[in-house]
Structures are given as C-alpha cells and as structure tokens.
Image 1 (tube, protein in one colour):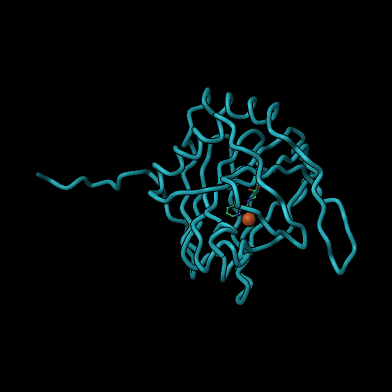
Image 2 (spheres, helix red, strand yellow):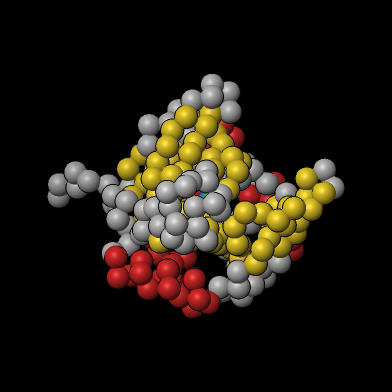
Length: 206
Ligand code: MD6
Ligand code: FE
C-alpha cells in the first residue's frame, strides 16, 4: 500500500528556529466556530483577572476563565486560579484538540478580548506545573488579532494573524526560547475568544 503523501492532519509548521509551532487556519468550519464563540461568550464564567507585580495588584486588560480537572490549580503571576468544572462544549473542543495533536489535556485557560484595547503582554508559558517542554493548543474564535512572537536571545520577530476557527500548536522548546503576546490595536473592535488547552501536573501528584 502506498504511503499517504500528506501527514494525518493539515497542520503547517511555522519557520521559527528553536521552536515547534504549527498552525491551521480554517480548522473549524465557520458554523462550528460561530456556535463555539456564542456558547463560550455567553456561558463561561468570565472574570476580571488580577496579577501581582512587586506586591501590587493590577487588573489585567482582558477577561479570563479557568476550567479543568480537579486539582489543576494554576499559578499565574502571583495569583492562584482554581479550575471550574468542564462545560459540555469545552470538553467537546478539548477532545477535538486531543484528536488533532495526539496529546491529552486536563485544563484550559480562556481569554476574552472585549475590543482592540484588550491585550496580552509578551510572555512564555513556562510555569513549573506545565513541565519543561509543554504542548499547548490554542483555538481562536471571533475577531482576528495579530499574534506576535519574539525570540528571547536574537530578538527575531514573527507576526501571525489568528482568525476565527484557527488553531495554533506550540511544543518542544518554544516556551524556552520565544515570548508571545497580543498587542493592543486601534483597528479591531469586535470581541475575540482564545482557548489554550494544557496539561497541568495535578497538585495531588506533586
Ligand atoms: C491568545 N495565547 O492567543 C493568547 N499561549 O490570546 C497564548 O498566550 C498562547 O496562543 C501558549 C500557546 C498558545 C497560545
Ligand atoms: Fe501564552
């Protein structure tokens, strides 16, 4: 039997050194993506998150919600988030991400960018509970926003627009060498939801 000329899925590798980043623009068809957007926008328990910088508490410029298996507490910039119980739709999307990547996830961080003035600063997802080379799957819904990468050492930059229904997978040494973030923009006014599925080492296992 002839081997398929194409890999199992259509993920495309981005040309970034010291990283493994894969992307698929129209992963979800538009009806499915619309349904997920509406459900998550209405049903998730969106909170104004806070971070502590040098002991000072500040509101973050977007809304957040954290869902996962029991024990997947998440420490983020000095704040601990306790996971809420999975919704039916989040579990369904998690299973689609698992089928795409062949990796299992036990938690998801949801971010809601209400308009172009909401943002996420440049960061790496390198918290100890994620392990050394985590695979993180990111699904984007709603407004297209630019996703920026910056290499920690060389300063090299790469920008990728993340559109409705697209999926981005980061793995290997990506978090070690690259920062990423979502800049503010004057252009984009509509809401965007991003979901990053992760595998957190549970507190019970520590
Ligand atoms: C966002 N995403 O797209 C924020 N992190 O709104 C992330 O911070 C992210 O997309 C790790 C892996 C993939 C991501
Ligand atoms: Fe991130």
